[in-house]
Amino acid sequence: MTEESDGDRFDRDDATTAGSDGTSGSDATPTSDTWTQVAQRHYEPDGDRFAYVVVSAIADARDVAVRDVRSPPLYDVVDATGLETALFAPDGTEPGDSNTGTVVFRYAELRVTVQSDGWVRVDGPADA
Image (cartoon, rainbow, N blue to C red; front, top):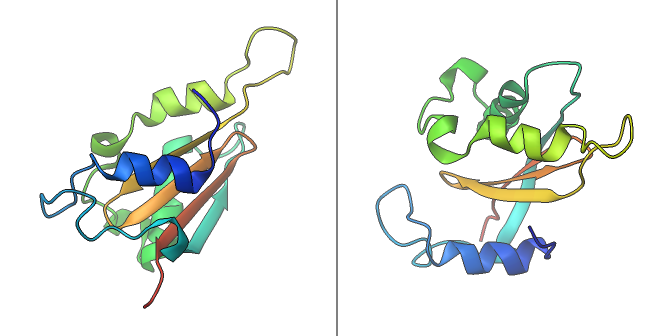
């Protein structure tokens, strides 16, 4: 995985991502400069499960309870176990070492950014 700025990677990926209504993501998708952070949570590998932290951040962004985040199911959007392994599992070179990087994905109308330092940030479209 190459490291790119959020805006560069997101704009390029957006053109091929289907929106929740079945339209192409490029039709009405906010550009990188029209997003605003609406929630964030911190993942601790020895704490809550990774998927729970991601869904909790999404729930915070939508101002709903975690149990109300159902559509789409997180596992339909991203492989949370694979993402957790890629970013937080020891890399095997030295005891305690871990991987570094950032993964950005869409969850319905939201943009979710997961960093290897444990921060899960959720951005929503900025008000026009």
